[in-house]
Image (cartoon, rainbow, N blue to C red):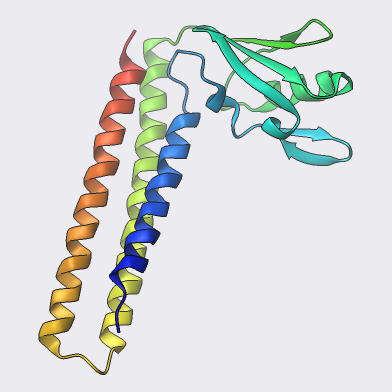
Length: 181
């Protein structure tokens, strides 16, 4: 029998991934999630920044990175500096790393909205792929009739519209947050 819950879980997973990507996008306010994609070269391997340090945002224009091991300060600073998509310039005092968040220009805000729109499209492509896989599975079902198959396809399309609407809503909210001066 066909399992609609499985498709719903896959689509929810795609939406969760999209939400995680949105959290990494810079909005002009300091957010620890902005450094979520930063990789740091420590102990001979590449580790995510959150596995080597505590990340906090004590104020709206500053992120504070406190390394678990102070000997990794230089590597953490280099990791943040080399991530060109962030455009941040960290400074350290030997114990903690301060990452000032400069105000965004209008042009930079538009670029960020454009990057966010690309992430929206990637998420919608993922949803369409999930739908297509489900349609293939439905077509291969032998024990149900054509009416039942069409009913399953309609349910999947309804789910698809619901998740796309959620993505669009999240994008509009993030766009407003980015463009707010």
